[in-house]
Length: 248
Image (cartoon, rainbow, N blue to C red; front, side):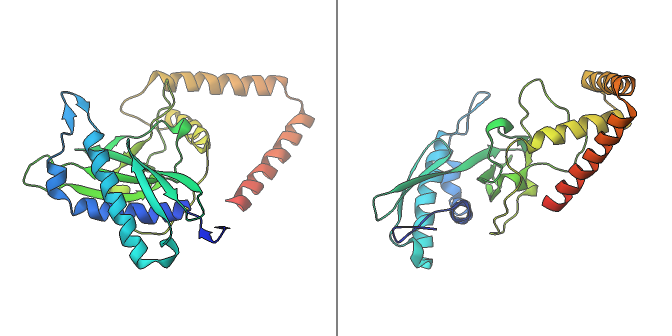
């Protein structure tokens, strides 16, 4: 799609920009080292965001040199994170965001999933624990960084914040769209059932609650469902699973 002769920026283009921005950030070790990252126990993102915005501007200039379709588009970036406004030659604008995370650990709680776009671009700064070591930055789509190697996640007493993992992030430029909003509800429901069927060294009150819920649902269904309704439900479930397999 084009806007009056201007290339319209997509999430894939923003991802390409994020990869280039991460490269420039990795080249900016002295600037990263001069940032005040914390104040007591609180993390400060202002310095990181300001530097990332500057690097994003430089990255866009690099991309414009390589790709003529960006030639007539300029950008402005504002903090927090990297909020990018693309200015087109026809006077129009579009807004996109690159999420920023930083930690001294390879794993950290991510953003609240209710409002999270898991297809968005993420830059993760792994800060060194020793001053002699470098800062390491990676760029990927958010869903690549999310920890997905467990099927016994606890659901929480607030909207979940899935753990993200620096090592999960892929340094490639293939934009891959994942499932949109609310995919996570089914995930946590399956995890809750897996937990009660798995031998765990540490259990949660949630596990006992899910056991009771499962027992009551099964008892209620058996007690109140006729054979005809059971057949209807079984056929409906089979059709639903077939549809899901085809769509997936």
